[in-house]
Amino acid sequence: MRPKGLAAESPAVLPVLVPQAHGGALLRGGARGNVGSPGRPPSALRERLRGSLEARVSVLEEIADSPKADPADRIRAVDVMARYGLGAASDVSVDQVRDRLGRTVALVRDRLPADLAATIIQEMRAIWLT
Image (cartoon, rainbow, N blue to C red; front, side, top):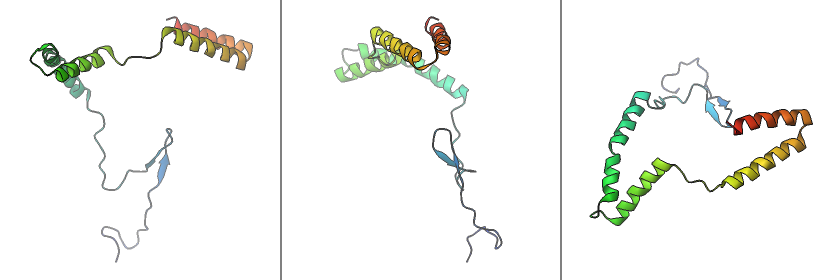
């Protein structure tokens, strides 16, 4: 008995994996029966969601400022505002960045021919000083 939908003369087709640049692999043509996802939401939807989020900032402010709100809720509201308003805190100081950049420049000078190292360092200087 042959599987439903296959003609008697059709050979069995095995899925072929196509290597990807990131090291994984995808099935050529996808998996049978899987329609896939729609992908990223369209920009109009993202724009609408940003507007909705902006309109609800006042809710976070009300919770954070309300003396009647539970202290844990007030703290969470302030935390959310800080995460989205300030971004993630960095544990790297300016001195650490300077030190790492200096070591990087020294490595370039040590490992590359002088003319190539000078060119690369000049290009790096242009990046860091703009």
